[in-house]
Length: 227
Ligand SMILES: [Zn+2]
Ligand SMILES: [Zn+2]
Image 1 (spheres, rainbow, N blue to C red):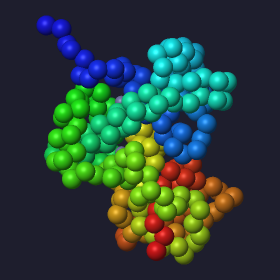
Image 2 (cartoon, helix red, strand yellow; image 1 turned 180 degrees about the horizontal axis):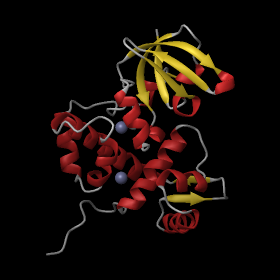
Image 3 (cartoon, protein in one colour; image 1 turned 135 degrees about the vertical axis):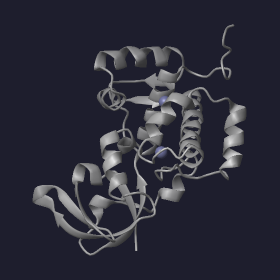
Image 4 (cartoon, rainbow, N blue to C red; image 1 turned 90 degrees about the vertical axis):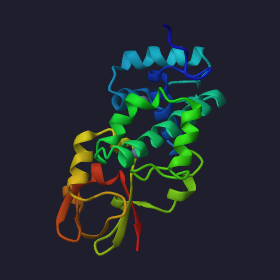
């Protein structure tokens, strides 16, 4: 028995992951750089180069220079589709299967590419049309919901806050995610910045029952609502 494609004109899982990453970079106003794709997707730079060529041939992206890569309308549509399926799958894993918060992102990758449009609609309905994923990242079209949250690295000692969002770029780092979960640094947690040491590139968060030291490299991906 042969497997029919889940939907017409949907790219392969690999291309979907590239498109999702690129969508996030463009959304954040960053240029799409091959080296960063290689690092984030854990593939070699030559592999990225070959894949990008193929993606341009197939109409997902436009390459107008090394630092001038853009999603086409078709590419953006496909990216938004896989991001929605990714986030809905995260909710399904977290809520229905009680998969730990720190693991739902990586588990979702194995499932998200094989969800039909019909099942996507059912998931959306079942989870009350969420605007954010379990990590606080916005569904495409809901970027305004997160617009006023600030990166933790912009705060001063004494600032009180709610943790709201762990950026997509950190979600893929499973050790960091586990550390954050173990220390209660997840959306909804209240905390205070009790120390910032720029020469050390660290800041200390005081939570209800513990103090957690974070490097700026990780803290830049944690977005908060300042009280
Ligand atoms: Zn994936
Ligand atoms: Zn997420």
